[in-house]
Amino acid sequence: MVFNVALYTLIAAVATGLGALPFFWVKKMSIKLIGTCNAAAAGLMLGASIDLIYQGVLETLWRTLLGLFVGFLFIYAVKRALKRAKGFEPEQFLNAGFQQMLLIVVIMTVHSFAEGISEGFSFAHSAGFGFLIVLAMGVQNVPEGLAISAALCPKGVSPLRAAGWSVFSSLPQVVMAVPAFIFIQKFRPYLPIGLGFAAGAMIWLVFAELIPQARADTRIGKWLPIVVGSVGIMIVLGLFIH
Image (cartoon, rainbow, N blue to C red; front, side):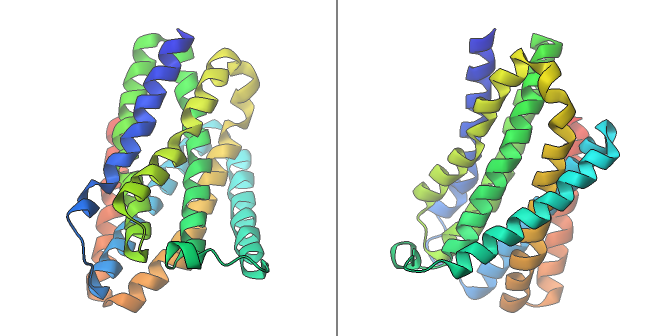
């Protein structure tokens, strides 16, 4: 059974890389298209954050709020640390936008830890229920990969590398699902904190990074409906999954 948990969650993690597929055909992006991608990424992340908060509150309100606050503080500290780093200029190697790339990968990786715990709990409930949840997570991972790729590819990162970063960001699902399956009683009390943490980190990135860039690259009549529509898609998908 442990092998099945690891195998199914690995398949769900690999599905994140599918989000980069459209960028193999979109070779040259205009400024407006970049703004559109940032708006879509913002909406997808915001929708996922709403679902994370909702699921956390169903468990424990105060622990979810604690995780939310810690998530804000963590991403703020990471941003400050990147700005103050001396003798380290990764833009030379990645053509630009490294800070945003690192933030997105860190945030989605933290998000994946919470997803992995949830998947482990599902398998502990029953094998059939666990398989359905992992299948749903795999479907949900595709737009998450799109959100990562939409932020990376316009900055000069290749679609293949973006797919690699997307899959990497979801690998903690495998790392956490197995121990969560085995030690469900130990992990359960901390799940709301993890969900809130991931949501807070994504919300910070949405309003501090992605939406300001979308506003700078396109008009409000273009990016705002995309953000709202992407949020709606994620919420509907979340309702369908749950």
